[in-house]
Length: 115
Length: 117
Image: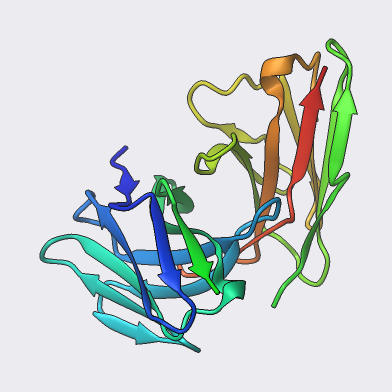
């Protein structure tokens, strides 16, 4: 199947600054995306999702932007805090056949917040 | 949000032994459960998908006779790594989804760190 990938493997930001994590996808038929946060030694935690009929969605301190023209997804974190340090994955919910869906994860970006 | 638990959180075993990992959805009934494997500094790779009462569907390259999955109830799925070898050492993560819609949220367990000596 087609893959979901990330531009930057690592990102270091100063505490209080905004963070932007990018993701490129290759399946033009993709219509549902999710961002997950994974702290060291833990399972992924849902952050925010977006459907293809939207180009922007906001949560608490996070915003996801979707550009279907260039097949690009980004996660913006406002006023980054030390607790935001983690690996962030974008994921695409793909049709696996017979009406079933499964997540395909990107490579991940490690966010390090500098105090 | 919904809670998914895994047990044990960490296991160390000798080569050749079998290890069972449990995954439970604590406050919802999971129509579908998923098992992932994650090697250090890598992404999650789907191993198999299971629906309650049905045989699991394994991803290409995953040996079904080595990684036995049992989804006996709507709140419990187990993964048994049979005849484990050092190359099976990894972080195993389960996930559960209540419904079958694309937009139904998948909740992840905390993971199980398997080390095979």
